[in-house]
Length: 485
Image (cartoon, helix red, strand yellow):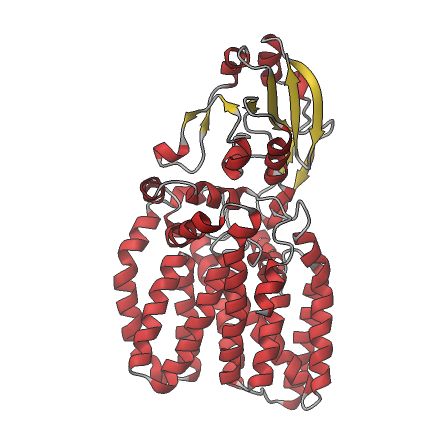
């Protein structure tokens, strides 16, 4: 419950960003249209979309309602980690690990993100608990492990790398259980191979991922767990370093099995993804390895316990220090523009929904310099805000064609459309006199070129139809311009 409330608090404030807009676009379709979409693209998220669609049918497409399932998943992941860590050590350690998990910036982000990552987090913890149980008890526990492994891989395909981490752990700590594990994994691989072949055919959808390099490894270290939060990285690094020094000085590692499991879980999935990215398909983007974050929580909790020994107050101090270090990132993530790159799609849509009158027209500019898509993404993000407005429509409708995004009508068509409009609300790039660059989320650069609406082709087409500017409202990156006859 603590994890759910912690994750859900303030989740209604940040604007949706591209990935979340994709979620809204996907679930705001008929089932036939959704199946068409995942047949052509985004198949890796098919199970998430299918489960989220009935939820949004009941509770709507608001920021809070679409994100709340992720908050539930993070709460469940924290509870599951308490159970796992209790099995690996004791209940106080389990509670510590669960609370530490909630302080990790990537987990705070996942619980406030309308995507499948929080679910992956939960499934990874459950799968690892089943590994530990099956290694001790065998037989039917391996069946449970296999079922959850299949669900985890179909939920988010890169979770398959967690099986490699589990294999390494068994080789290092419980070789007697490897036979049951091996048989189970072979069965899992056979059963998920059609799904793997299917999503491999859609690999063009991740063609935007930068090539693997040493810089990407540095990005992993800073962004995968810490989301760019230097204070948290420093505190976590100090805690782990002190514990490792203490272990070296005493020449002993408490709960060595736990220690090995945490490191295997933390590092091996990343190593597998990096090797594949260096030699073939680019797979790595910060957030794709979110299912390894519980391993970091285990390692931090182990470090605190190792340093504290019998003085439990030291573990409390460590937890408070981690929470304090995470607080600035927690607050930033829940600001109005707290999503990736400071996107403002929700703010723009809500403004038009609140100010436009039924029958007013709306125009969407083409892709700005910082965006891969046209400004119609705002309409697909907040469809309810445009329900009573007149829209020229897309050249190719996303829902009808099995695409994620609409193909926009050429800007040149707006002159004829505007002739029948008394008021036009224009969604376009923000006013900008100087160029700038953002590096959001450790991903590709976003280039913001100088822009003035009155110099744009869209303005020329609409003004030629007899409309003039009567108001402008600037948002973080975009602006809404009101034009009237």
